[in-house]
Structure formats: structure tokens, C-alpha cells
Length: 507
Image (tube, rainbow, N blue to C red; front, side, top):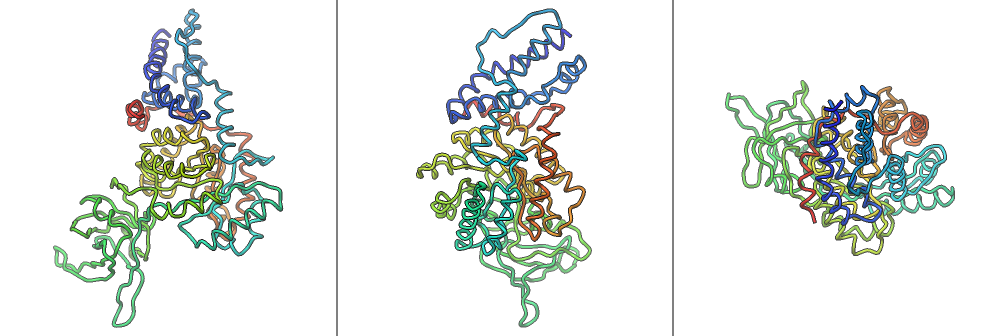
């Protein structure tokens, strides 16, 4: 027991040693996030250590809770140390004056922040439902009405899809229907962010015909160019075999300039994998690694992911800045995609400071490895405004980090956000089969049930979206009576190790 007491005391001292950082970051946060910023630093400090052995010993003597201390770290460690010392026959209380948050207060703060962001209330459940509204709803106000009635509390509009006329029609329908129904529904407008994609493919087939796709097989070579170009030639490989050598343009020259030989390049949401084997001034030559008997079809405008490349593209594009007046006029919440570091948050906030709308919500989309690795610093930068949230964009994120890591990383994002008392949106492929076909798989029902751990769940539009909202609402209502966040084994987190030292360096 004395060894256990010593280990807990060391934990407490590690927190005290970093308390100056906690106080420092609190000065830069909005008042409503001051204590949350302090708690985030404490959590990152705590998770810099492997606590599995400590927690197993605590569980053995019936003193638990480190596994679920995200929202109230210092108070929890003090309570555990006091109990362990009491078991060892010693009364103890901290000599330092420390501002702490208790369990109930942490839950209250998270609820307050969730209300600040969404400010909607359904009698049957707390977890919000967000829907990426189909473009077809621009011409069908009844669809909007049904979605709101069945449980949609946030209607999301993507500026990377549709036209200005369609966006304004959707906004008008949402406003009109929520007023007629007397049910609030917030409008989230997502900025486009940088577009990483192929250009149009026009491959000559015969003397007159062209096709807008390329069928690629394992071992094929593909040339990416920053010039507007699309063709297909043939060349001999090193063993004398004929290699297909299509050449296709890309949406941004940074894809060419910043990618290095050996880097992985993924196309079409990760369905086609390649690796860079040659680099020239305006071109990259890649070899296809993906294997398929009938080859894989690469279409025009297919998405590009660069998991190995540290791109320096700004998340806030010139086009986004042009559209900000429209967004600030109509949006309750702004969706901010392709964030990579705290610098992106600062760039967005600098633009927003020009508008007299300090309480507009900001949802930060975590969809690449850099954003995950920099998450604590991103959250601290975001805390300068009172209405913030985090979306776990599982589609792009899984492509970037690998499907085998998405469950682990998703949980870590939720823990860190809980420590910061920041509401989380669980997104991508939720009840996707149900939305597309009208039939839900058992696996996606389980995934939807697990999503009740988040403060909001996002659905993508589809033919059966109204039915899907109804189903999700029922699932969340049932699960909220059984689920509240999580318990973990408390292995040290690499993301903590990478961010702790940086926290004390930020102004």
C-alpha cells in the first residue's frame, strides 16, 4: 500500500509541477472555458504516464475512478490520494491552494458548453442529431419539415456542394419550417477548405471516343501533373512489359511540390493506393499498389489523400473568405474542415473578428493525422471563443491514419475533448445502409448505439434519411439511460507526450 501511495503522490506532484502551464493557458481562454483549459493541461499531464498498474491496484482495494476522470482531473487525483493515505492511517489534504473542478461540476460545464453551441432541446433525449441536408431538399420543403419533426436539431449545408441559389433555398426552408413547427433547428454551414482532387479525365479511346475514367491494376504507373492535362501513353517496363502511363492533372500544385518520393498517395476515399516513385518539376510518377483482378476504376475529380505528406496549404481558402459574409449572415454554426494545427484556428478567428457575431458556433473537423496529433493545441486555440465543438470526421480520418486505427483514435479524441469540456459530433457512415436502402445492418445499429457517448451524431443525406433520423432518435433515447462516456485502461497517450511541452510555450 505504501508503494501505491507513493505512486499516487508522484502523480499529484506531476500535476502540481505543470500547474503554472494550466494557469497560463487559462488566461488566453474565454471566461466560460477558463477552467476547461486548466483541466485539459492537467489531463494531458496525467495521460503522459502509463497508469494501468496504478489503476489495477486501486481497483483491487475498491478505490477507483482514474479511468473516468477526464472532466475533473485534479479533484480526482486529490480524492484518490486522500483515500489511499486514509487507508494507510494518515489524514491528508493538499497544502497548495488549487482551483479544481468536481465530477458534478464537470458534467455541468460540458452541458453548458453543449447548450452554448447548439441551444436546442428535445424532451426525449439530450444527444443532438445533425443531418447533412440533401440538395434535393432545396426543392422539397416538406422533407425539411419531416426531418425536423423526427428529430433533426442541426441542419448542415456544405459549401463544397451545390450552388448559392440552392444554399439560400435550403436556408429559407429550414427557417420557415422551424418557425411553423415551433421547433428550433440550427443551421450549420461548412466551409469548403482546400480541395485535394484529380482534374477531369478525358482519355482518348479510338479516333473519336473519349472516356472519363482510367482502370488501374497493381503495378500500373500514373503521372500526376500540376498542368491542365489528361492523356494516356504506353511505355516499356524494366522487364519488357507494357506499362499503362496515364497523365492526369491535380487540383493544387502543392500536391506535386510538397509530396516526396516514397510518400503514399490515396485516391477516391482511399480505395486506390499508390506510392511516389519519381518526382519531376511539375509531375509525380506513382505506382499502383492496390490489387484487384478486374482493376480499380479511377474517375474524374476523385479525391486525393496524402497521409505521409505534411502539406502547408491553409485550411481557410480565398474562396472560403469570399463566402464568409454569406455564412455569417445565415449560419448559427460554422463547420471548419481540414484543420491541421492551431495556426488554422487563429487564421479563422482573425477573419471572424471582422464581424459582430462573437457567439457564432465553430465546429472543428478532425479528419487528418496532423489534426489528431495537434488536437490539444488546437482546442486551446479554439477556446478563445465560447461556442465551439469538434467533429470526428471518421471517413477522411480513417483514410489518413488507416482503418485499423480509427476506433482507437476516435476514442482518444473523445477523451481529450471531454477533458476540455468540448462537445463532440460523431460523424460519417452512421446508419449509412439504412439511409441508402431502407434496411439497417446489425453492425451499424451497434455503431449508432455507441454514438450516444457523443453530444451530437451526424447523418448524411440519402433516399431514406427521414426514416434514418427516426431510427437514430429512438436508439439515442434508449441508450442515454445506459451510457455515459467511457472507461479506459489508462495507457500513456502519445498525443499527450507530443503536446505537453508545447503548451507552456504558447502565448
